[in-house]
Image: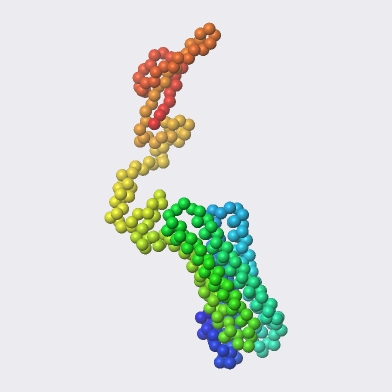
Length: 307
């Protein structure tokens, strides 16, 4: 949209454009605000979901993140609405021949400044929270610094959002609208791209490790990606014994039955003798011997299995 607006004449002074060119440039510039504000606000929800998934915050912190990100999307979504309804008819925003009746420019400017400041606050919160969590982790110092740097890229988006707020008064410059709003379009594009990069960069760690010659195994251990150095892993895979699920008995009530048939087992017979004496039972525990050997006659016999 920014490219189309520039091709139509946005960035030039109004007196350098014909009336049709001026109208077309203002129209495209105004329409470009819709994807611009959504590109700024929507990635915040993605960042919040990523932090919730990775850092497992408390229930209160999850609610705060969702509340801030969703409310930012709502506030930002109202900016294009105010832009197009400020004049009646709406086409009077880019067509002066329609003789529109418009609001005071300060209404739109003040609301967009509020939205920009709120967006900067959300970026700041989403950047500070992971740092407060990661600094307490017992991990290598270099890894901790790297993670804090990756998750704190929201600080850059916060700075860009604050500076962009200084360009928002250009929305009220109807005398030279195409030239005055050039900086606003540029910094809106910069802010949206910075937020998207900040949201995607933490998920690119596996690709970075692959490019640098390392990869993460299933057990979380990092090994060189050179096939010659992975001989130990291939050996384990070739020599490992795989047990088919169909070979395992379905009976799970006995230790003997739940073990696969290929496991080593040893069975013991335990004989317990007892006889009444003076009305009381006297227990005499017999010896334990391997299975397969006969035992003397006993009153009770138990059979257990050990691995």
